[in-house]
View 1 (cartoon, rainbow, N blue to C red):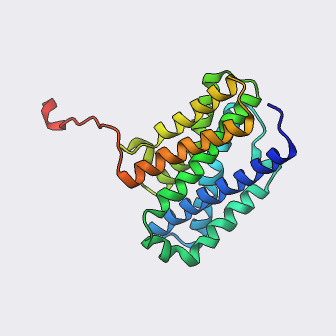
View 2 (tube, helix red, strand yellow):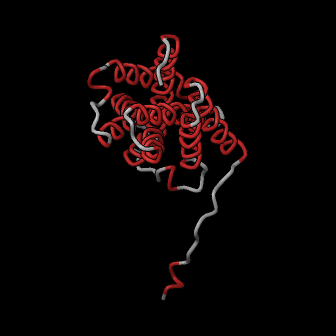
Length: 213
């Protein structure tokens, strides 16, 4: 899984995109809940680094943003930069979901890649990819007093799972690392955006509580 300097620069760029996208989604949710500017920054940072932090704890690896604090700085800057355009963004079509979709796609792929680099099994790598992608959003929604999106009928965790599995299969068959990365990102992003714009959903379990007696 050796990568050239060009690929390493690409990974760095993708991490910046993912952090900014997740941070913007957190900031917009904070705006919907009418939090102050500090709350906007905190929610933006948490959603940007939360999934990777949990992944690193589970893998018993150094937490990525402790050694490279610029991750937090970028997340904070992206969240605060959202404030002047928040009113416009609120009128755009589902801005939180779209920003979140970009972050989800990037971090699922990067999380899966990191797990594979640590010689985990394919199964663990898939789980770590999903955790990296969804955990920050779960924390965001809990703090904002919203039902976490993975508990709704939206195609969210399923998109993350598909992207992680695709990455693991591609890597297992010796596909070029860059192609594996981009294939995973594209799969998650396409599935998630289609779900957003075409209202795809997973069937729900409906039980009337009164029927239980």
